[in-house]
Amino acid sequence: MALLIETGLSDWISDTDIAGDIRRLLPDADVRTPDTLGNPADITMVAVVALNNDHPKRLPNLKLVQKLGAGVETIVSNPNLPAHVRIARLKPDAPAQGIAEWFVAYVLRHQRHMVFHEKAQSRAEWTPRAPLYSPNTVVGVLGLGHIGARSAKMLRAVGFQVKGWSRSAKQIEGVTCLHGDAALPEMLGQCDHVCAILPSTPQTIGLFDADMMGAMKPGSQLLNAGRGDLIDETALITALDHGIPGHAVLDVVSTEPLPSDSPLWTHPGVTITPHVSGWHLGEALTDVGENFRRLTTGKPLLHEVDRARGY
Image (cartoon, helix red, strand yellow):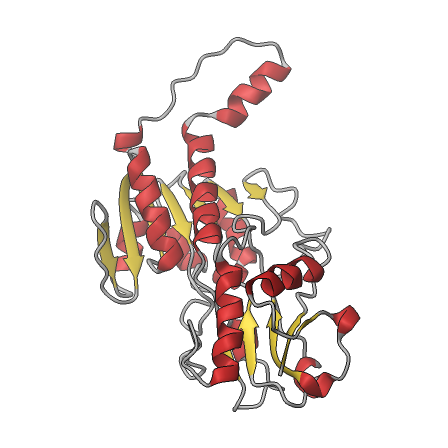
């Protein structure tokens, strides 16, 4: 039984580095990369960012796909993945912390008028502008799982009024938690910033269409670090042109990398970051190694995905 590390990315942590970290955790484990693949029939577990269509064909004895992250929608929906192959995701602290910091950074960027002051400096203009008062600012967090709850708590600690929304009822100290479809549009109308960290499911794909964005507070800011398919990007451009919302900060988009001819690049109401909010894996590789050990010993997996539910 062997574990294959194959992220498929050239601009992130290398397969070799990840494999080295797991070997240090499990010195006796057979951990391979595409450069050291050997016999594909040996591979029983693959750790990926995205599952290639040819993985199930190349790896005839595959038993587990380990996502190096949280979102598993493209793995669950892969038509080539046999029904018996299990899927696991990660719930690491490091990317949750990073995504929460990303939300706080871009909310504060707006609150403190940082772009305004940077432009004033470029013109050598001393033009004071009062920052917005955080206790009077309402920040909504959509999705109150591991990452969303961490984000809501951090935003609350900064001093914002925080409202959270999820499909099922949740409780977070200091956060007004709402749930269910009916509660979302009303909440959006109360928020100065909306931070989305929702998974990709049939219920969330295209959720932010023209009507949903029309329910937002005029001039508010929409921040998305969850899944790019949450937002109808054509409708977003139109909504921004009308000032509802007033600005969008997108770490994820429907097609990544974002095509060079996308109007999102040049729209004055859009800020793009290239899917960097939850960069570090931190201690998560311990769970990858542990799942390989559990797979080989027949024990229950960590964070196994219910393929019927999609998460």
